[in-house]
Length: 205
Image (tube, rainbow, N blue to C red):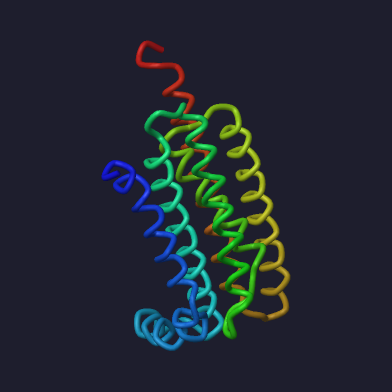
């Protein structure tokens, strides 16, 4: 019993923490009330649209951290006695399923709404965490390729729209930040793929 509690207790406890994080007390309006003043103090040159874009980016980063940790905890819980590939797929699947449940629950609150984009971000974060730790074969390689393609599309689209907005005299910091984030993800995934290839070749290659 102690062994099962030690394995399954952490992911279940973290799921409860995620449910708290996605409650009314940490809705966008609530976090903006203290995050925006802090950002304004740190970046006095930033315009209001830039500050709001940074606030939104920090909230999305929270999703990445939450579900990366959740998938890692599920991988640890499911790993003993299971093939690595199966444990990895279960860890990703359970994390993605909880993302759907949590977004559905948010739609019932007064200050939040469900977001398919957030579900996709959560699932991708779970996938990346598990892939980084275990690299579960061809499925992970295909997923990495798809995510790199998506990141490249986001980068190019963000830069194209930013160029148009800049020519019209509109603020473009949010689009530039999106392009930088997706470019970082693109290069991170490339490094992850190279790490796998090096590991698969072994020390003698």
